[in-house]
Length: 97
Image 1 (tube, helix red, strand yellow):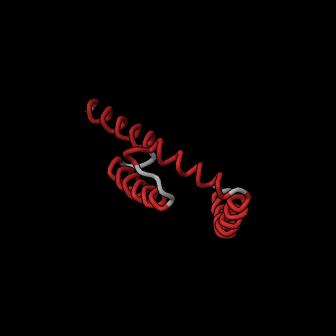
Image 2: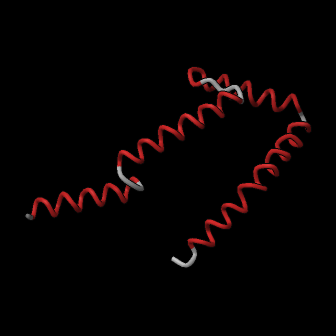
Image 3: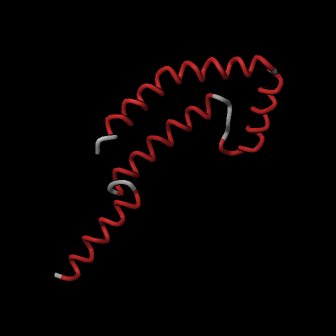
């Protein structure tokens, strides 16, 4: 019985460390990795030569000049209109717990 208690505690500690069961965390990480990969690919980053891709991205943003700041600001505002209210609602709904 003592061994079973120790295994149960070990599983609970692992779940707490990972933020859930190992299988569920692995699935979330895979899906998030694919999503981030798609986004990074859309902005032109390549995993095989990440340094050159980042250099190319910075150079392209630099070449755009002030237009890049305006472009970034517009996308920030567009995303913030959705993200900030959802975040606020989630935080307020968890406030009582």
